Length: 292
Image (cartoon, rainbow, N blue to C red; front, side, top):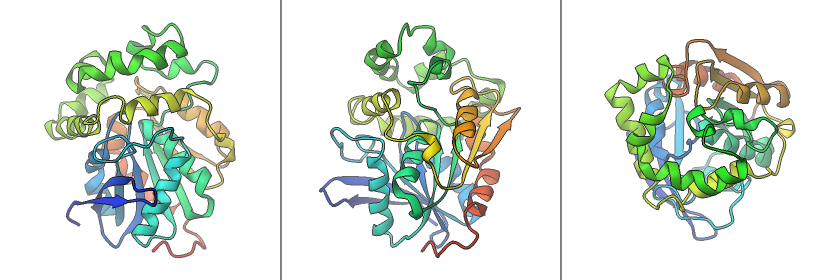
């Protein structure tokens, strides 16, 4: 399908910016973008969505890109927004794909929405930051400058995000797999466009809220997730280390863990999405009611 942009009004008068990729009549999958980012990030997976017969629906979270801000939002509120989008498009059950900082939001939606979520896939997924030893989930270049989580929550967004994508990328100790991916102009261009779109409302739009939510108590435990979940993580990931994936795999009942030796943070959701989407479509499909 041709990439289709729409601004969808919700019941409270807010608007969410949505772009769709893949196959219009395909299996509905909501894309939960990373931190910081926007709906444009999902363009990286447009080809894989088409090949898998997926209708990939990507929305800017509140305060990002062209989506209106939502004051005092919670992790669980994103699940309510996705249900409204599903109703708008006439979708019954759907699947979720959470990438990097989108993983907590995908899991929160699965917890909140119960039977409407058929399955979830996480790629390079960030875990809860308040757990003991969670500072190990920060990239080393961030962690070395963070004496405490409280300090991080207060200072990181302004210190890091305001520098722009090129400056941030230069500071990242990227693994070989990620360096190879970022050397591809079309990948770098897409990620930078997603970042710049996501930050058009400034760091106080969506990014600051997200960072606050990551580091404060979540309204659920991963052990409460009652839908099939597959977890994909590269062992070379230096941005969100594999400890995050191992934590989720140990907590979420029946979760399927895929740790890929030769993949990094960016290379995994770029180059392994065919496999991710194939498993995501299979998960939860037995005996499930129609998703349209």
